[in-house]
Length: 205
Image (cartoon, rainbow, N blue to C red; front, side, top):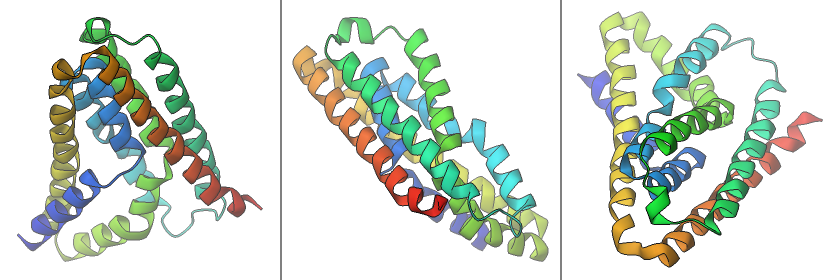
């Protein structure tokens, strides 16, 4: 029970913390409705199997520059996503933006790419969650499974809740407010991408 509560707590904190994936969830919900945002929120369920397996396997042998390279590449991808969103906002319309299937599918693909290339999940698992999971696993396999399951339930659940809230405001925004909201989200994405690149670029030397 302790491991489950710990996983739920860490996952909830991570789920509501500002970051590239959360901004992308909000952007996707504004553009394609809450379903698109919810699908974007599910990106960790698609990508983190690789993240978790990779970090647990090479936790003690990860090259020093690996996370730095990943951080810079991830920052560029996040920033470019923001630029594209800003460009789309020029002619964005709620009437066009509410076609559910294409935006939703695109939202999941884009969010999965951003999450996989972002250093945040890699760093979290390499420095905190990985060691904690390994330690819990040695004490009992069931507790370790509960820890990881609890973490992802609240991580994804919190982001889905944000998507529902953001998507539900679309019908009251109008096209002008919708475009403004898209631009704000786009600027946040560019800022997040730039911050990632600036933070990790010095470590490439």
